[in-house]
Amino acid sequence: MERKDFLKGLALIGLGTAALPIIGSCGGDDSTTFTPGRPNGMGGETCDSATTPSETEGPYPTHTPNSLVTADIRSDRGGIDLEVNIDVVNTSGAAVAGAIVDIWHCDKDGNYSEYSSFSSVHFLRGRQSTNDAGRASFLTKFPGWYQGRSTHIHVHIYNASGISLLVTQIAYPESADSAVVAVNASAENGYTKGMNGYTYNANDGIFSNSVACELCTINGNISDGYAQQSTIIVNA
Picture 1 (cartoon, rainbow, N blue to C red):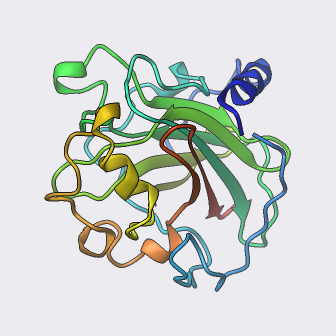
Picture 2: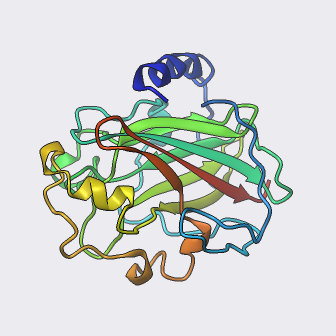
Picture 3: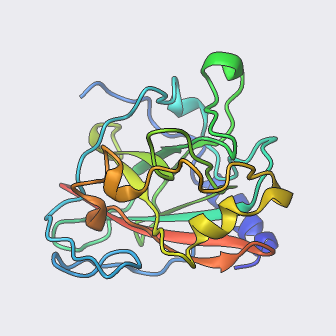
């Protein structure tokens, strides 16, 4: 999808997401279904879990996610454009409409907003509600990486009433021709670390035992940007 077309879509999405509920304690409109045991991601691994695995929020969750209802979460960050599509379904494969989806991730240099030197800004964080097909979409920048973790995006999903359904993370394919390798070789776009010292999924403490259920599918290129899709299964 062209970036200009996606941005037009964001304006329409925003019309329906201005009044999301306060959290309680407890894109295209393609329909998506899930069958346990299907290959997930691009590596051919098989996911046999009935629901997407729960993962830690990590040390950098969004402080007040209900204040960040936005689909374009790039802010002032540099890097390569990335369209993130998340399809939320229940264990029967039915789309979950009206679910609240929060995402957050680091920038190309491995920094998170709202913490440390970036405590007063909110880049690469946002919230959307799923449409009738169960999809929430965001426009962001391709995440960088930091020591001890592979490339990832954090996701917290709530039902329409604001009750937490799942906290998880999205992983990326890492083959030699993958987007992760291509992006991290793109010094001209600010990705200066390369893959030297990178922690691969197999050695990542979060993904090492569950990556088959958390890999996204992704396509695109350095010049035009990338688009990724994940199907996240919740008890709903």
